[in-house]
Image (cartoon, rainbow over all chains, first blue to last red; front, side):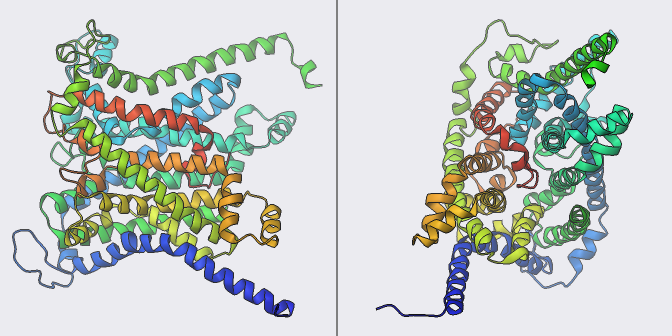
Length: 301
Length: 285
């Protein structure tokens, strides 16, 4: 026997069943993200109000003491500055070279098939491997960089790139740019390939130079792609840790210590849990503001 | 006819331009290949070759001894490989299953709506250092530090936002008509997902799995914090050579080469999907 129901009811039943099924299909993923993403975040708010240190017994509630001490710590501000420098310089250089390469490859015809895979390799490498590799390249005695520089200037060069306060940060920047320029390249190339060639042809017929066509026609069209690429790079450079860990270890002194590395040290080496949690929240709020601003800009397009 | 307008002079100009283009590209390609070449050659160099001044580019007597030493000195390179394989395979499979269920519900039933999908992507944006120590303390309380289940759980959570957003973008491209007719024929939604939607977006699904594998393969921070002597991964094994300054370059080279080779092969196989993968489905090719 079948129960006759009118169409609206059947539709409502279907929608109700879909909603339930959908809920149960999303549930496992949501639970994992809640357990490993959200719960630790909430837990760390709690920790940030405790004096939780390796050598001090007990975990007294101290209100905002940890926040006060991290905000008055020069090393913390310095590490934020290093992160800001890395983000600003690395992302700009990566964007410029990436865009330039994308245009070159786009105009290279069949050679694209050879160059694409080559430019893709660094992105797939383990950052720890990249760090080690560049450490060997920068080596003052046994590295090829000083050797090549020596050929160029005509006499022996022995710059200790990674242990010198003025060259260590540029060395890390080069390493970072080497690994992630291909990211910009790949994303921007995808964007450029999608541009309708008729637009550029129309501009060319109107007598616009190639350079002008690129700035006035092509770039505005790929603006959304540019913003997405920059957003992702900014987020990832803020996380920079691996390369620093195996090249300079934050040194010399703390000249190359980005904020993730600083917080890693206060947590893992000195086991100052409350202090580290407070620092993480300061960082989190700063990143959230920046990301909200960038996402807003992306959303506008 | 635009072809007619182009005279002989401008054709020569385009050819010159092409040669300049290719020369520049070759130069950049050398810049990107050189470090990979250097670390690969170091894996086969005798220690007296990589500690020679001025540096030797091509060794006279290549050696394979570092391929043995990598297990016997340090923490154990091949053990790290086994650990990485177990952890990455398990976490990739689990996150693909959970992710495809969630992505299907999100694209077909609009479960959770827009806010839910943005909540998921925001997980990817927050700096991992913010949850590193809380997770460490929780795992310590559970006595899960240095176990496979701990690493797999963390990596599943780490991969899920990526998997869900990628699959979401691929599932949206599957034409609705076939699914709808299957549903009318009495197929259940789960059957539609596994028999129609997943097979129809197979290239994208494979690309997602490969990229998930690569991203977890390269992860370092959590592996460093949550492993001790049992489940250390390849990047962690490599980092243990950091303190011991100059002695182990050959071993570092071997581990680097072994960690690059499989990833390069897998990655190049799905190279068409790379731009999309790197932006979580935002940029399509």
